[in-house]
Image (cartoon, rainbow, N blue to C red; front, side, top):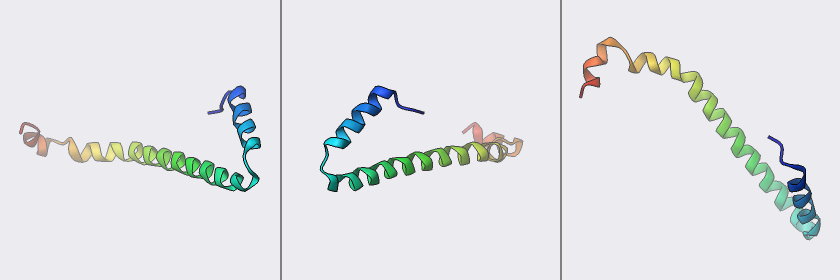
Length: 69
């Protein structure tokens, strides 16, 4: 998902206003956010892939009486 151009311009303006020694800190934070998004996407993909298998385990006739508890 891409940010609107005006938001990118605002962020770039703020970056340009920072002291140069702060730029690596901002870059580290951006990397952190990207990693967190990637991990969340991976977790969702794994959950979606395992759902059919788990559905077979949890929803079966042998365990139907436990569903009534």
